[in-house]
Length: 256
Image 1 (tube, rainbow, N blue to C red):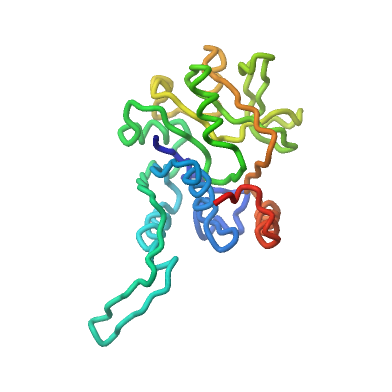
Image 2: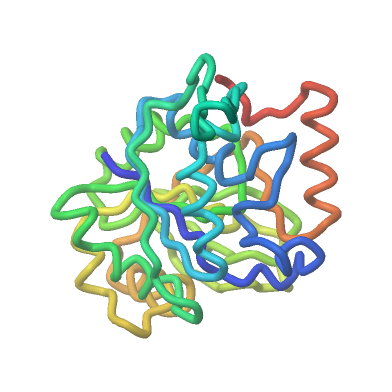
């Protein structure tokens, strides 16, 4: 099963860093937050990734192209035509497709553009700027039990994210993007999606403003309530909070 990661936005709220690199490539603990997210999925056995890139997408491609160089000891033999010897050659068991989905493309349209890479299969979908300790296997089992088009992970957080109103049977009643009125269960990403989702997508679709509300109306959106850790990295303050957890060896998302 493939994991699709939305990584194409400008990241304007953390412009101190995103001016120079795409937000998913901003480092915490010396590695891009994108790498941390991929390690989370890989821990549960999901090793195939499709990255929906856009803003400064070349930097993402170049980082993966040089993965062995960046993450291992290297000897450069200048006497023999600059031969490079990579020691240890430790790497992840990943297959990574990086798709340039455009600079100003809405989130839903980005997913539409990678349909050929996903095919007619269930897939994971999340954002490239948030880490958590969600049990991905439990999330998938929950999704399969309920048979809806999309299952979204919901967390309780005092932030301006997409707010979910959930009924007693965990069916999503309403979806409001970036509401400031209530600190309720919010959209944390970490979704499981059926290929039927592509029927809802076009070249102008916003996942948050168009697709999810339509799924709500059709009774096709389920919520997996996560009571553990989740944190996005929208601001420098949040980046520093993540860094502090790593420095103290208290990062809840690191299980590998």
